[in-house]
Length: 296
Image (cartoon, rainbow, N blue to C red; front, side):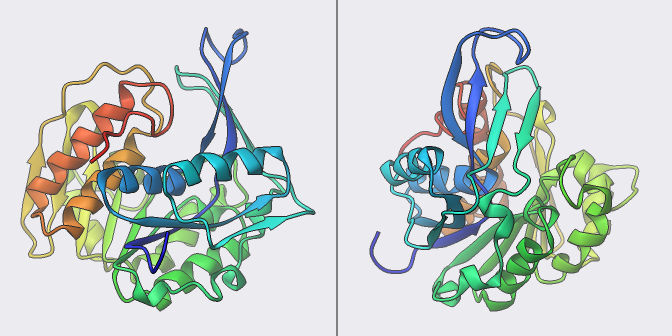
């Protein structure tokens, strides 16, 4: 990649082994790949035709080598990825029926900090992308996301993407709320929004959440479709795209990429919802976190 990408994304990616012939406890056949919401979104963006770069840390180890090779093959910008000889690349084990196990404590990406953004032309990007996962990895990763949003001049995008079992998972709301006033667009599942607000309908939930600062709210509802509150305060909904759920992991990241790609190319919110739903459905129908995203 030459020049500044359209989108910078910051966060952890792990080496991933996906069980193919049963649950994680019983399977004997695994597929080696990689998993991380931010890099998944980058892969989907580049496939759709929006340039994207990933900012992170990886161990100086074979899993880190495999991740950089795979992302580089997808034309994701890697100029701002640092390799750490003292910390390993994180590991993710999962199956296609919902079991996920993380081995990321002490990983290279758990040492992310604002220092990793030095020299990154954040101000020149059209958008920056982060998730609620990164502030839960530790205090320094959280500071990195605050610095990312502070410096950004383009659209500041956050997917809530709440996770259990991380350093800050028992303080999720307290760690993420300070970011919300710096966001332009927030996406998440309905249960993730309900961790912050209590409202009887999806639309009222989005409107309550918007009082925290973001001007555009997208609520992903899986098989029930998606809804969005646009910057003018209008509510929009789309039905779910038809899909056979082969492996739904990564579908939300693909949705994010489709939605953001459309918005960066002047689509209105209803059009962006449709593009997000199309990309999410394509990933859910294939094994792998981003393999099903169609190429432009």
